[in-house]
Image (cartoon, rainbow, N blue to C red; front, side):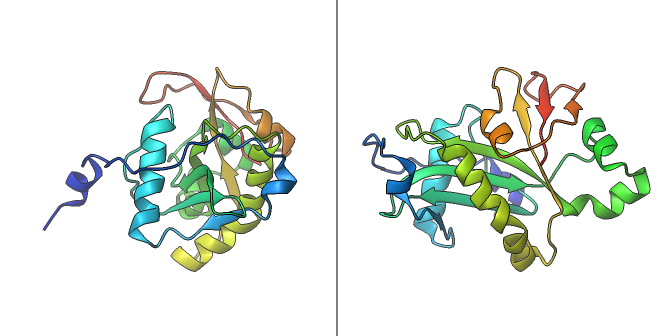
Length: 194
């Protein structure tokens, strides 16, 4: 039997995919699709796209997680998003919510973190990122309820300081503060929940 820890560190195999530039206006791509990743082929594509094109790469997630492979109306992949478990403690988030340690312990599963956000590099569509965020925000709690038996009440993300978080601002996410701890990669980040 293969242990979960060994599985997480297995290499992600390359998957052939189209990289023809996508530059149409957003209305021409709609309706966007959030593809069901129950098939082995789509799971492999999702993992490879993140591993190949996301600046933090990708390993198989553990715990409660919700992956989204976003495609246009023709089925062409546009973006990958991964939501999952949050950090046990994060001062800006905890102050924003106003909970004490006991409350955090019993309610932390109602918060999810956007671990990966990737618009594929050959996709150049104005307003696509904020549009997808809104689409996922309207659906995420229901999807987590169906998969894990509980909704979520808050979404959060850590935005590396070298990025501006423009698409989050366009969707009216709030900035409760900057983290003071370092991530495992050593860079400071800020948190931007809705």
